[in-house]
Every structure is written in structure tokens, then in C-alpha cells.
Length: 282
Image 1 (tube, rainbow, N blue to C red):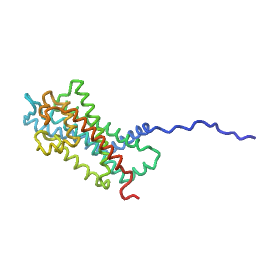
Image 2 (image 1 turned 30 degrees about the horizontal axis):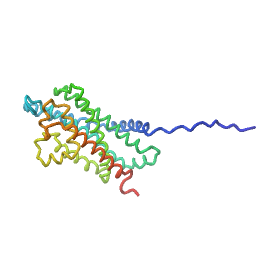
Image 3 (image 1 turned 90 degrees about the horizontal axis):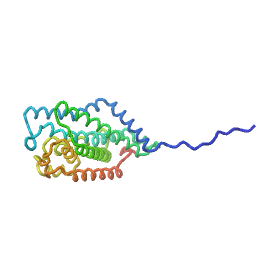
Image 4 (image 1 turned 45 degrees about the vertical axis):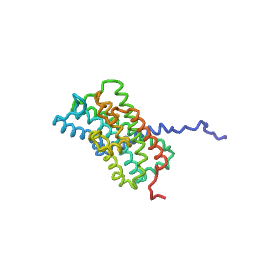
């Protein structure tokens, strides 16, 4: 009696890095939204800051910009959009990866067949989705509660799109690169958060950039947040407001160049310094 053999067919193909990356996006989103307190604070912070500044200066009748001027709420919105992007990209990614490394999660992931690129795609997808949601919420609040006019031209929204994409990509990549700086997960927020806070104060987010000391303007011009805020001002402020800028124009070319330069720099630093294990691991 002859033994029967099972038919031999082609071996099942392994999922691609992209499909695994998309699966990681879903996982990252589920994990992120489980931390409800962190989610509420992160999404509420830009809205609260807009409400505080718009209420205080709005009631005082402050007008900025060229005659006849525009409301402080309208001037403040672009900067707070930019700071929301840097919080969700650079700050959130740098803190999260540092904690995942400290808890051994990255080491365990590295021991699986999943490509490293899928892990980073998951982080980038998380940043993109959360930035879109936060920005949509902020713009809705600004338009409905504070009567901030939204752009009406297609060119303005095109500018918004490329500034938004470049800003989130740059913040995310720089956050990945900076995640190796903290020595532990517990120290991450103490290292990362002050960097973001200082940049907010010197980059024209809370104060008019042209009113800051010259040396402060020069320092801020080296970093992305100043250009993110300026790019957003070109979208949400009326024609003629560009005369308020230090360079006398929106400098879209310089904005793109600086953001791309930091994107490349962050990528190079990340590739050279990223660690899957803690410093004290053998």
C-alpha cells in the first residue's frame, strides 16, 4: 500500500514591508488613543492656547498687521497650527520611542521578522493621522468660535498642503533621530519638552517674530518651527501681511529649503544613531 503525499504548492508569500507598515499604523493608533489623558491634553493644548490668547487680546481690541489690520486671533492661528504639528511629530515621537526602548519593546520588535522600515512607517502614519485630526479640530474651533476667516483660494490650500506635509515629515524624522539623546525613557520628557518650549517662544508662535531681539531671530531661523509658522502665516493671513515678516516676503523657497534640509539631516542622524536597545544592554 503506497503512502499518499500532500500536493506541493508554492510557498505562501510573506507580507510586504508596506503592508506590515500599514498594519503598524493601525496598531500605533489603537495604542495612542488608549492613553486618553495624553490624547485629550495633546489635542486640547493648541485649542486652549488659541482660546486664551484670542480672548485676552480680542477683548482688548488689539489689531495687528497692515491697515485696516486683522484680529489677533487670525494672526495667532498659524503659529499655533505649527506648534501643534511639532508637538505631535517631534515631541511625541521622540518621547514615545525613548520609552519603548527603555521598556524593551524595541528590542523585542527587532527580534521579529518585521522589517525596521515597517516600524518607522507605523510611526509616520500615526503622526500624519493625528496631525490631520488635530489641525482640523483647531481650524474648526477658530472658524466657528473666533470668526477667523479660512483661505478661499486653491493656491492657499496648496501652500497649506506642502507646508503641512513637509512640517510633519521633518518633525517626525527629527523626532526619531532625537529619540536617542535621552539616556532613559523617564528622562525623555525632561530632555525633549524644554527644546520644544524654547523653540515656541523664539519662533514667532506666541510673539510677533519681527519684535524679537535680532540674535533671537537669527537663532530661531536655524530651526524648523520658525519656518513652519511663517509658512502657515502665508496661508491664513491676508494679502499684504507679508510686509510684517523680517524678510519682507513669505519666503516660500527658503521655507521649503530649510524644512527639506532638516528632513535630510534628521534622516542621516537617525540612521547613524538610532538604537533598538538601552544603553546599558550588552
